[in-house]
Amino acid sequence: MSMDEAVLDEVMVRTTKPAEQKGDPKPKMQPRYNVILWDDPDHSYDYVVCLMKAVFRAPIERGYQIAKEVDTSGRAICLTTTLEHAELKRDQIHSFGKDDLIERCKGSMSATIEPIE
Image (cartoon, rainbow, N blue to C red):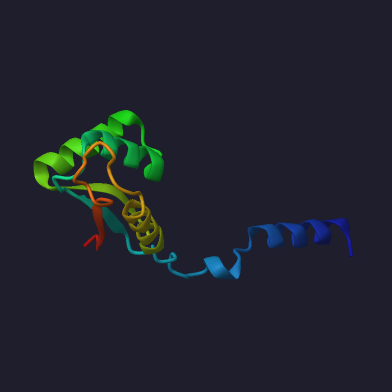
């Protein structure tokens, strides 16, 4: 094999597309879900701020924004993610515990997940 043939073979290998790139569609994105925190009278703003910090690693300012939104509109979207991650975060909210600042509080806040349309 001459030097020209070797260079030609090398160039052909480098410019050939891999089989998976030839006409294959892009992989489908996983469906997205919102984690919704619901309002109730038995939890304080401080509780929501602490919850957001512990479960979502949110800064205090973001926790306060969520607390205010829950209080004014009755619900707030805490996170948009995949189904498995949304289920985990919902379960973490449900297991966060009661608000020690409010005596009548019996347990954690309520959260649900909803698919994004």
